[in-house]
Amino acid sequence: MTSRIFPTAQDAENAFYEALESADLEAMMSVWAEDEDVLCVHPAGPRLTGHAEIRRSWAQIFSGPSRVRVHVAQQLAIAGGMIAVHSVQENFTVEGASRGAQSSDAQPAPVWATNVYLRTAAGWRMIVHHASPAPGQAQAAPPPAGGAPRKTLH
Amino acid sequence: MTSRIFPTAQDAENAFYEALESADLEAMMSVWAEDEDVLCVHPAGPRLTGHAEIRRSWAQIFSGPSRVRVHVAQQLAIAGGMIAVHSVQENFTVEGASRGAQSSDAQPAPVWATNVYLRTAAGWRMIVHHASPAPGQAQAAPPPAGGAPRKTLH
Image (tube, rainbow over all chains, first blue to last red; front, side, top):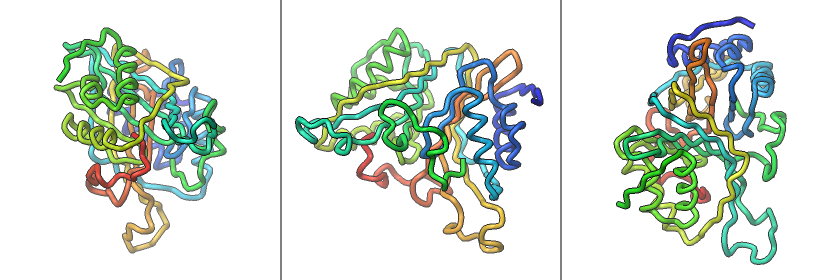
């Protein structure tokens, strides 16, 4: 694998979108950290964790016939000395719905959330909450990447 | 507004989900940073920025008749000295589709992405990419929070 050094986070972001446009799997994977926890949620997709699982998903996406161009807009960038990133699955139960019966049909789908906390002068505070529906009946575990909708571009 | 100190990011996360379950707007907003850039993407929703806009969205969500319980599972937590969080809108153009005409109908919907980068021994690398479809025709600017689907729980 090509080993690249990105001197800034912006350099890594530029490389990410260049790899996406060129459908270059090696370039894409060179953007991701190798020895750290990594996670990826494609639109309407499950949470993928680990280098191998994420690589497999991009290989699948890049194997399609379409090539896309992507224009990145409205960037907000936050950098801080003390930041914590949590990723969780939120499983909801609506109170009052389907009394007695714990039918999964009557309950909302689980949600993947990325929560980012910043250590401020007033202790730890949330700065980002990004939630999106988890696909399928993934109450206990996310479905394999192959279960993602075909329309998903990335 | 109640001023609360959260000694750890986990304390802030616990308070976030407690506020969500109790539909307590003041408790919810006490979790969010006040003087920093903050952003929130509810499932299938636009990106909301700033304390006032985020507060308005939670007020709207909590005004509904349903109360939910949420069980948080499969947490991944990442904390580092040098982390950068970027939020961007990705606007796609499929090459070869609708040749000549720049019809927005033929193009995929924009996507909100939260990208997190970590400074590793090998420079900056991506550790999180969380993307979800942006609602409506929000090519230039996201629609107001009121435009979000009614089924969205949060």
